[in-house]
Amino acid sequence: MGKTLLVTGGAGFIGSNFIRLVIEQRDDWHVINLDALTYSGNLENLADIDLNSRYEFARGDINNSELLDTLMPRCDAVVHFAAESHVDRSIMDSTPFVQTNVVGTQKLLDAARRNDVQRFVHVSTDEVYGELPLDDPEAKFTEQTPIAPNSPYSASKAASDLLVRAYHETFGMDTLITRCSNNFGPYQFPEKVIPLFVSNLLEDKQVPLYGDGLNVRDWIHVVDHCEAVLTVLEKGSAGEVYNIGGNNERTNLELTHSILKIMGKDESMIKHVTDRLGHDRRYAIDATKMRQQLGWEPTRSAWPNALEQTVQWYVDHTEWWQRVKSGAYAEYYDKMYGNR
Ligand code: NAD
Ligand code: TDX
Image 1 (cartoon, rainbow, N blue to C red):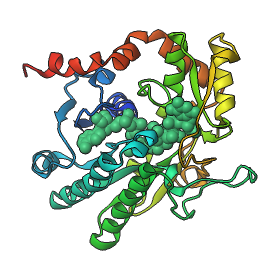
Image 2 (cartoon, rainbow, N blue to C red):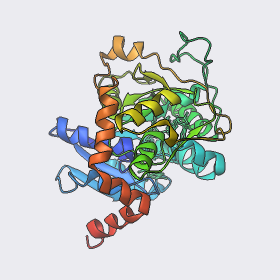
Image 3 (tube, helix red, strand yellow):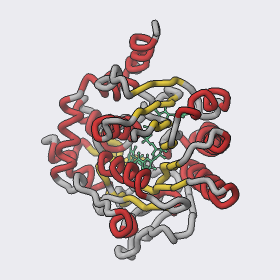
């Protein structure tokens, strides 16, 4: 029988890709997308399924318990993506990070418990593990790696992970946690490195590379991540943590050179800028548990093809990122929902 999911943060980058995947691949499931439409929430990301009868949008904050109590009685499971997600913003002001990522997650957990929601999948990040050294290339984060976040963003995500764990231990709630590496693909907000660099180059602007450019990220295609989250929702064991990664480590310098090459630009377009405070050196995920226990593997993340296709997506969707950069995307809500 079909399920009804409450997806939080479904107007963002990963949440919108997840909703599209579920609507396409589970033809008797319903999705309620609860999103506050902060600066990174963009309903244009879901314009193609907006009118689907199995999809519903509710504008609201995960901190609004009354609203949660109106939505949750209809839901079998919560898949929780909503968050403040940008490390640089958390360095400027961590207040919204604590409010949404920590307090908001607690409100959601309480509402799920009150309303007997059967399963709660919490979408977290590899950044809760802190950083790996550059001089030990074999080292990777496993689910047993101690939590040691270094940025206000990752600290807020780690705090929410611990709450999710505690609700399982204390109340026996069916909660699961996923920890994924850096995502790339369509509909990523152009403050994150790949869409920022591609859109800058399309505007003939330089790309700001932090520090020495030797920090390493483990890149995964967003649809691989979404399939992993769906797999955890359907097959995961209550109380477990699952690491998700693309097995695709690159330095930022290598990433930048690849983007320049794909776009036919030269090194003069790189602007070396001051490093990010507390900039984690390296992330790398060991996803053995996902592979061995749940049979999941990334199938779309291999470079150079996956990176080329993503760059091409931003080239083909210039209007999408121009509307984001200009702020025009915010008008979509009124156009689509203003008279409903
Ligand atoms: P995003 O910033 O693109 O989207 C976040 C969404 O949450 C937006 O639509 C926003 O409007 C919504 N939101 C924010 N605060 C809210 C609130 N209080 N109530 C309701 N909605 C709210 O982020 P993303 O990159 O899609 O990340 C989604 C999740 O995945 C986050 O939890 C993030 O920590 C996690 N994650 C991201 C990555 C990555 O590489 N982007 C990697 C691993 C994990
Ligand atoms: O202008 C830039 N220049 C630059 O060199 C930006 C925006 C980033 N960088 C570097 C910093 C990082 O080493 O590129 C790398 C990637 O940066 P971001 O795209 O900001 O991602 P990151 O900080 O690694 O965090 C991302 O992955 C994990 C997501 O934003 C998080 O939500 C997720 O949890």
